[in-house]
Image (cartoon, rainbow, N blue to C red; front, top):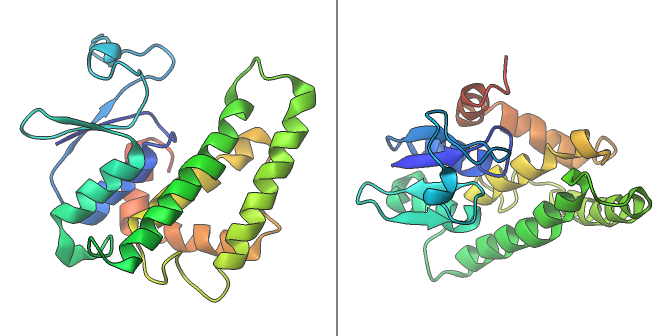
Length: 201
C-alpha cells in the first residue's frame, strides 16, 4: 500500500493508523502547495481532487477521504481492534465521531488556513471551534480515548487538535484534551508517524 501525505495535514491520521496496524506501506510525500511528488509527478494525475490523504492499494485501487481510509485499514487487521466490528452500535459511534471531527473540527479550521479569508471573519471561526472543542473536552471526561479504548477516531482527533497552534485556537484551557494529546504522543505509532513527517525531532 501507498499513503500519499503532506506533513501535519489530515493525512497524519491514516499515517498514525497505518503504524498502529503493523501493515507494510510506503509513505509518499505529496505537496499540497505545488501538487507534485518529489520526483516531479503531477499529483492531480493520482488524485484529481489534489488533496491528501489518498491510499493506493496493492491492486492499484485508490481510496480517498481520511475517515474511509482509516476504517479500511482497521478492517484489514481486526485483531488489533482499531475499530469496532461492522454492524455494531459501537461502529456507528465511531462513524459518528469521524463525521463530527471531519465536518465540525477539520472543516472548521480550513478557512483559517486560507490567506484570503477576511480578518474580521476569523474571530467567529475561532469562537465556533472553541465551542466544538469545549464539547469534545466534556466527552473525554473520565476517558482515555473517545470510545474508551483507542480507535482510529483518536488518530483523527489528535491530528486536527494539533492545528490550533498555527491558527490562533488555544486549547490549553481544555484539560481533558491536553491530557488526551499527551497520551497520544506516548503511543509509539504516533511518534513514528510524527518522526516520518519531520514533525518530531
